[in-house]
Image 1: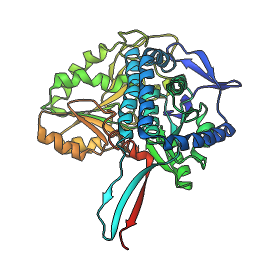
Image 2 (image 1 turned 180 degrees about the vertical axis):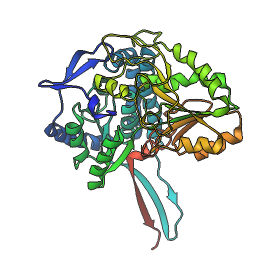
Image 3 (image 1 turned 45 degrees about the vertical axis):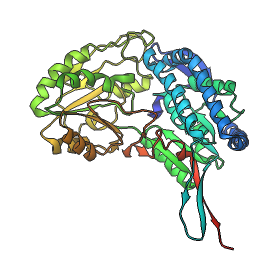
Image 4 (image 1 turned 90 degrees about the vertical axis):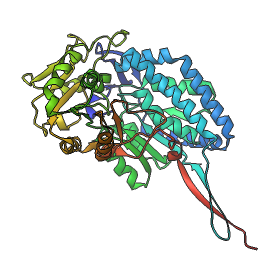
Length: 465
């Protein structure tokens, strides 16, 4: 996110080339930001942040709401841009632009409610203040460029910070347009800047800059580990979201028809390039064969094609490098269920469900980040939990059962940050989002979103003579 380093946009003398994943054709070039330009951006952001933090909370909230109105007026433009640069289906892309808009509205409501507390103490009064950190760096991925950029940037702005956003090399265009809309809405100049460029250059300059108080990074575990180490050297705050290998647990007492009908898009949304994708389908052995019989026609019905077509369910992968990565997990002779995908130009891979895999096979344990799922049988509740937890990740997951007690027991036992019962919903801007284990550190969104971008200051006022 950039999930894997080999999926980055190709640089040339003029900057990074942006490709249309549906055709493989270059349609834009974006200049890259070097270390000196990052340094200048940090200095400008710090100056803008001081004025922003000093502004009346109502005025900051009003500007964020105005920003939301402008995003709403440009949803279709932003969506079409996302279709072109990321290969997202047009329906998904509209939702993504709307998510950024809705988060602006939600966070604006928190600006005037970002309160400290009064703590009873002897000999005086004790109060706390929540103060902005200063300049926040957000490093966003290519799989959901607008929403994930917003999850870090918007609460940080609402809490009184300045934001420097580095989009992924392959998908910088919507970020740049959003920054223009923010400026048009009246945000102070340099408060919200977008710095396109390569992760090892622009991203590294942002992470190591002493003027950046916090980094929010979404991407691969390998890169996230490096980001965390560099932040540790400066005792810099960091929030990480590093992917997942999420289970979809189907018990024998579940509504099998509904569970099977919903399973395909639980891992095929955004061509499987989703950190919450339910790519490990765990089915109780008693109903395993019946579930596969129901799943096969559901996979066949998935429409893969032109992402600009309103009827398309799944578009292409982001790049040639990502296509090769996905192919490496799926031998031609691997048993399973396969859908269809376009042939010819573009980065296409068909919906694929692998069966008869060993539980420790790479496709069953590693984040493929493509339209590939593995189906594994389990015997009982304990076995389901054991399989669900048998990965280094713990981001999301689903479980299907009619037994409320089992739903509660399994939800408590599965080590993941975001679980759904009889549903595949993972992310809502009004609830916290984040992972266990190697899926990340910290939480985004929800009621605590703004406070995550503040320092708590404690002040004691003596009442003694």
